Image (cartoon, rainbow, N blue to C red; front, side, top):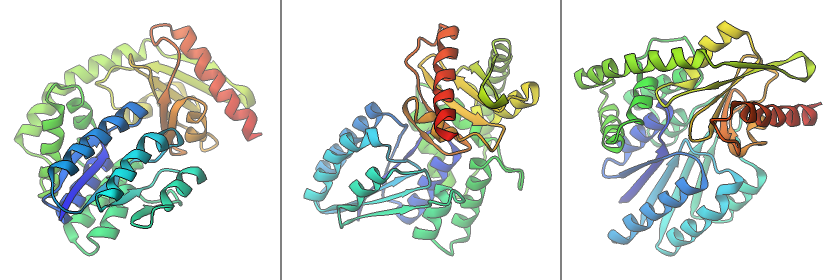
Length: 321
C-alpha cells in the first residue's frame, strides 16, 4: 500500500513515532515538519506531489503533531485532495485539540484520529498500541520516547534529544533525520557516526549555554510568581537547558526565544499551564508542561520581548483567576 508518514522534526517522540510507523509500513515516504502555517503549506505541497506520483489509494499517517485552529484552513484543502484520490488519513497525537479542530477532523468518515486526552502518553506509545502492539522492539522505542518527552529519570537513554537539535542546524538536516529514523526503526539507537556528530556538537552547545546564561532576564508576575526570558541559539535543547535555568533562578516559568522569534515555554511550578500561555502568542500550542509559539517583537530588542511575554503571561493569569 502507498503510504506517507508526516511527523514532528524537533524531538525524540517525533522521530521514534515515525520509526515505529516505518516498522509497520517500511515502504513509506517519511516527511518531517514543525508547527506554523508555512510549514503545513510546505507539507501539503509535498503530499500533493507524492500522491500524484503514485497510483492507487494510500494512507497518510500524521504523528506527534497537533492540529491548532490556525492550521485547519491550510490542511482542509489537503484533506479534500486526499479524499478525492481515495487516500485515507490516520492522525495519532497527544497534544490538546480544540473542539473546532476535533469537529473538523471528524467530519470525514475515512479519516481516523487517535488522540490521548489524558496527557499521559506520548505519540510513540499511541502509535505502538495502534499499529504494532505486542512488538517488543516497538514497545521499547515507545518507552524511550516517553522518558524523553516527559523528562523522566526512569532509564538512561542516549543523548538523542541534543543530537536531533544539532542535526536541525545542519544543511543536510533532512538526510540526517531520515537516516536517524531508519536506524531507529532497525533498532539502532547509537553508532560511531552519531557519536562523531555528538562530539562536534558538544563544544558548540556549551558555548551557546554560557552566552545565554549571561543574558537571563527575570520578571515578577502577579500572584508572587516569577518568570525568566532567555535568548538561545539553535544549538540548545530547551527542555534539558530549562533544568539548569530553574536550578540557577528558581523561577516558576521560563521562556526561551531565538533569532527567528520562536518561543519555547517550560515550567517549574505545576500551577503554570504552558499551553494556555502559548495560546496568547502567535501560532501557540503544546502541553501544560511544555509549549511554544511565536512572538511579534524583534528578538534583538530584549525589552520588547520581555514586555510581550509578560503581557501574554499576565493575560493568561487573569483568565485563570
